[in-house]
Every structure is written in C-alpha cells, then in structure tokens.
Length: 324
Image (cartoon, rainbow, N blue to C red; front, side, top):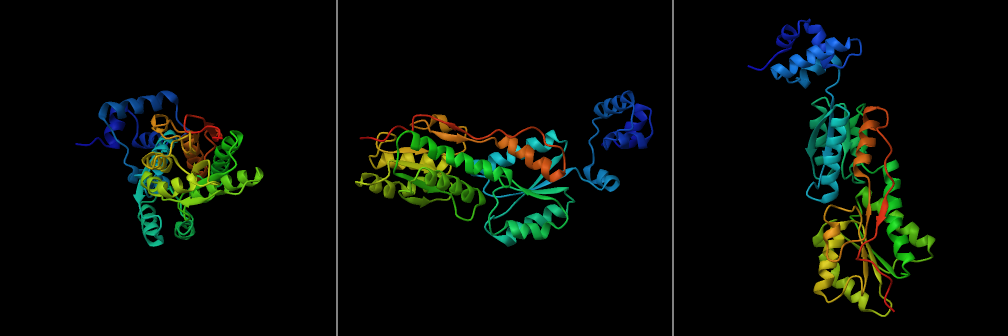
C-alpha cells in the first residue's frame, strides 16, 4: 500500500497538519521537526500527491510546456533545459505536444495543460501565428516563451556574431540560409544577421529558407553550388542553425564544392555534434540552460536564477578567408 500523510505523521510523531506544512514548504517550522518529517517520508517511500496538495494551496507546482518539433535539436534541447530549470525551482513539468503551425492544435494542447491546473505555460518553438492565440486561451495563467523578450535579443546578437566573424575574415559576398519564416526564432536570427550585414555595408548575396533540418540544407546545396561557381557568387553562407549547416556541407561535398576552400559555412546553436562535422563547424553557442532558468523564473514570478550568458562565436574549421 502507498504511504499516506497519516503514516508519515505517525512515524515522525507529529500531526498531519505538520506533515502538510513540510510538503507545502511552510517557513513556520523548526528545522528539527522538518528533518524528522522528511526522514519519515524517505523511510516510508512517501510520494507527494501533487493534485491533492493543490487542493490546499491553489497551486500544483507544475509548469505546463506547449512544445512542437521535438525531433529537432533546438526544441529538444529547450525542453530538456526547461525540465532541469523546473526541477531546480522545485517544480514539475507537464508537456503537451502540438503542431506549432496550427493554432487549433496549439490551443488544444494549452487547454489540456490548463485543465490540469498548471501554474504557468511556457512555449517552446513559438510561431508568429500561434503565440497570440495562446495569449488569449491562457487567460490569467502566466505565459512565457523561450527566446522571446531578453532571449530574442540574444538570438539577434548571436546571428550578428556569425556575420561579424565572416566579415572579419574578409568576406563581402555572404549568403543566408534562414529558418522557417513563421518561427519567432528564425525571425530574430534573420534580424540579427541583416543588421550586421547592414552595419558592414553589405547586402545578402543570396537567401535560401529551410525548415531547420539537415535535409533542407542538403536540398538547397545544388542551388548554392551553382551560385558559388558564379563570378560574383557567395564566398560564405551563414546558416540559421547547425542542422541545416550540416546538410549544406554534405550536399556541397556531393556537388564538388569544398568547405571552407570554396565557400565558408557557419551554423548556430553549437549542438553536441558540431565539433565532429567534416569540417568541424564554426557556430554560435547560446546559453539554453540559462535561458530556460530565466523563463521559468519569469513565468512563476520567482527571483532570477542567475545571469544568462551572452552568445559566443566558436570558430572551427568550416570558415576561412575567401579564396583569391
């Protein structure tokens, strides 16, 4: 049989009200009493019934996450970081998956989480079409999204770092491989890249748009190869994430285009495999864990849990000065 609050109270020699105060983190307890109750809970294998606790506290201590595209590295890393941040804040994560491009799917996922009484909603991989719908359905429940607000500015800065790196190597014909136009992260990364190019007095040599996948990068590689072989073609391509950069590098190799000898390539995210690409990928490292802590604290109205590190450019073998 599963241990109850009464069992814990009997083992610790306290009242059930005292056990409830320990469960609900009441500050009005003597340390020795709290320790005795916690020891009894551990001995009995007592597990907190989150739903029952909510009846007495008006909180489930649960954060709802509306997520999509978890097979992609960025959203998957974001969900994992949110889970860790929630645990650090002594909260639990409940995740509902949806088609982020479909407002009905997203609002349905949010409503399922709200019906569980989550204390806040956090969106991973927010889309321009669905975030307004979420704000409407959330009502009084706090709503936040990864890589928006302060996080969006770091996305812009990171994209600008990749362009600045290429300009510093001497590139003046820089093309972009952007993410999906309806993703907020793609929009902010585009803004950062465009701003850095404008500051350098450069217009994009070309722009291709993908869906974040390596398959997209490989699919546009033939067009990129044709452009690179042109007399005024790009000498560098800044991809909006590492997966598209990986596909592009592989596709270019199949077309006989060498990276970085014929064209330099940069990514964004510094995923776990970026250093092992051929060639190793020059990319932008972002503090996803810090961003997740910031967003969880913001959504729950908690004090900030440390500063979020600024993005940094990780220079590797996929970039070099332009030939000639």
